[in-house]
Image (cartoon, rainbow, N blue to C red; front, side):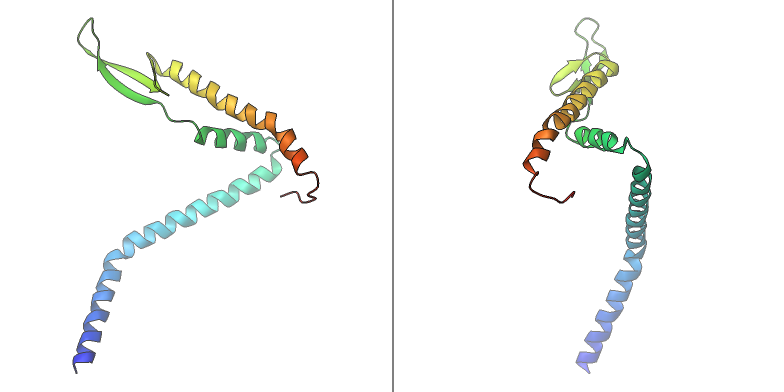
Length: 131
Protein backbone atom coordinates (compact mmCIF):
# COMPACT_ATOMS: atom_id res chain seq x y z
CA UNK A 1 0.00 0.00 0.00
CA UNK A 2 2.74 2.45 0.96
CA UNK A 3 4.70 1.67 -2.22
CA UNK A 4 1.73 2.36 -4.47
CA UNK A 5 0.96 5.63 -2.70
CA UNK A 6 4.59 6.82 -3.04
CA UNK A 7 4.77 5.81 -6.69
CA UNK A 8 1.50 7.55 -7.46
CA UNK A 9 2.57 10.72 -5.67
CA UNK A 10 5.90 10.78 -7.52
CA UNK A 11 4.15 10.17 -10.84
CA UNK A 12 1.72 13.03 -10.18
CA UNK A 13 4.59 15.33 -9.12
CA UNK A 14 6.53 14.42 -12.28
CA UNK A 15 3.46 15.08 -14.44
CA UNK A 16 2.89 18.47 -12.79
CA UNK A 17 6.56 19.37 -13.20
CA UNK A 18 6.46 18.38 -16.88
CA UNK A 19 3.26 20.39 -17.38
CA UNK A 20 4.85 23.41 -15.70
CA UNK A 21 8.13 23.16 -17.67
CA UNK A 22 6.58 22.28 -21.04
CA UNK A 23 6.38 25.87 -22.42
CA UNK A 24 10.07 26.48 -21.64
CA UNK A 25 11.06 23.12 -23.11
CA UNK A 26 8.98 23.67 -26.25
CA UNK A 27 10.48 27.15 -26.73
CA UNK A 28 14.01 25.77 -26.35
CA UNK A 29 13.30 23.02 -28.88
CA UNK A 30 11.82 25.57 -31.31
CA UNK A 31 14.93 27.80 -30.99
CA UNK A 32 17.15 24.79 -31.59
CA UNK A 33 15.12 23.77 -34.65
CA UNK A 34 15.13 27.32 -36.04
CA UNK A 35 18.91 27.59 -35.59
CA UNK A 36 19.39 24.23 -37.30
CA UNK A 37 17.16 25.25 -40.20
CA UNK A 38 18.99 28.57 -40.60
CA UNK A 39 22.37 26.80 -40.53
CA UNK A 40 21.23 24.34 -43.23
CA UNK A 41 19.92 27.14 -45.44
CA UNK A 42 23.16 29.07 -44.95
CA UNK A 43 25.19 26.03 -45.98
CA UNK A 44 23.08 25.60 -49.13
CA UNK A 45 23.56 29.28 -50.03
CA UNK A 46 27.29 29.04 -49.38
CA UNK A 47 27.66 26.18 -51.85
CA UNK A 48 26.55 28.50 -54.66
CA UNK A 49 28.50 31.54 -53.43
CA UNK A 50 32.17 31.56 -54.39
CA UNK A 51 32.89 34.37 -51.87
CA UNK A 52 31.42 32.49 -48.89
CA UNK A 53 34.89 31.56 -47.61
CA UNK A 54 35.80 35.22 -47.18
CA UNK A 55 32.55 35.92 -45.32
CA UNK A 56 33.21 33.01 -42.95
CA UNK A 57 36.76 34.21 -42.38
CA UNK A 58 35.49 37.67 -41.44
CA UNK A 59 32.88 36.10 -39.13
CA UNK A 60 35.54 34.03 -37.35
CA UNK A 61 37.83 37.05 -37.04
CA UNK A 62 34.94 39.13 -35.68
CA UNK A 63 34.33 36.55 -32.96
CA UNK A 64 37.93 37.00 -31.81
CA UNK A 65 37.65 40.78 -31.38
CA UNK A 66 35.92 42.33 -28.39
CA UNK A 67 32.87 44.53 -28.71
CA UNK A 68 32.80 48.31 -28.36
CA UNK A 69 31.61 49.43 -24.92
CA UNK A 70 29.65 52.63 -24.28
CA UNK A 71 30.79 54.49 -21.17
CA UNK A 72 29.34 57.64 -19.65
CA UNK A 73 31.78 60.00 -18.01
CA UNK A 74 31.62 63.54 -16.73
CA UNK A 75 33.08 66.17 -19.00
CA UNK A 76 35.69 68.05 -16.91
CA UNK A 77 34.91 71.39 -18.58
CA UNK A 78 31.10 71.40 -18.39
CA UNK A 79 30.44 68.75 -15.69
CA UNK A 80 27.80 67.11 -17.89
CA UNK A 81 27.64 63.41 -18.72
CA UNK A 82 29.26 62.54 -22.05
CA UNK A 83 29.08 59.24 -23.89
CA UNK A 84 32.46 57.74 -24.82
CA UNK A 85 33.29 54.50 -26.60
CA UNK A 86 35.96 52.09 -25.40
CA UNK A 87 37.61 49.47 -27.60
CA UNK A 88 40.54 47.44 -26.28
CA UNK A 89 41.18 49.96 -23.52
CA UNK A 90 41.34 52.99 -25.81
CA UNK A 91 38.69 55.69 -25.41
CA UNK A 92 37.09 57.23 -28.52
CA UNK A 93 34.84 60.28 -28.79
CA UNK A 94 32.55 58.82 -31.48
CA UNK A 95 31.27 55.36 -32.29
CA UNK A 96 32.48 55.76 -35.88
CA UNK A 97 36.09 56.12 -34.74
CA UNK A 98 35.81 53.02 -32.56
CA UNK A 99 34.08 51.06 -35.35
CA UNK A 100 36.85 51.97 -37.80
CA UNK A 101 39.53 50.74 -35.41
CA UNK A 102 37.55 47.56 -34.72
CA UNK A 103 37.04 46.92 -38.45
CA UNK A 104 40.78 47.42 -39.01
CA UNK A 105 41.52 44.87 -36.28
CA UNK A 106 39.10 42.34 -37.82
CA UNK A 107 40.68 42.89 -41.25
CA UNK A 108 44.16 42.37 -39.84
CA UNK A 109 43.15 39.05 -38.27
CA UNK A 110 41.49 37.89 -41.51
CA UNK A 111 44.52 38.91 -43.59
CA UNK A 112 46.75 37.04 -41.14
CA UNK A 113 44.69 33.92 -41.73
CA UNK A 114 45.21 34.15 -45.50
CA UNK A 115 48.88 35.01 -45.01
CA UNK A 116 49.34 31.80 -42.97
CA UNK A 117 47.16 29.65 -45.23
CA UNK A 118 49.87 28.60 -47.75
CA UNK A 119 52.12 27.35 -44.96
CA UNK A 120 49.25 25.42 -43.38
CA UNK A 121 48.34 23.84 -46.72
CA UNK A 122 51.99 22.97 -47.41
CA UNK A 123 52.18 21.22 -44.04
CA UNK A 124 49.23 19.05 -45.08
CA UNK A 125 50.75 18.18 -48.47
CA UNK A 126 51.19 14.51 -47.58
CA UNK A 127 47.54 14.31 -46.51
CA UNK A 128 45.30 13.66 -49.55
CA UNK A 129 42.07 14.51 -47.72
CA UNK A 130 40.38 17.83 -48.38
CA UNK A 131 38.74 18.08 -44.94
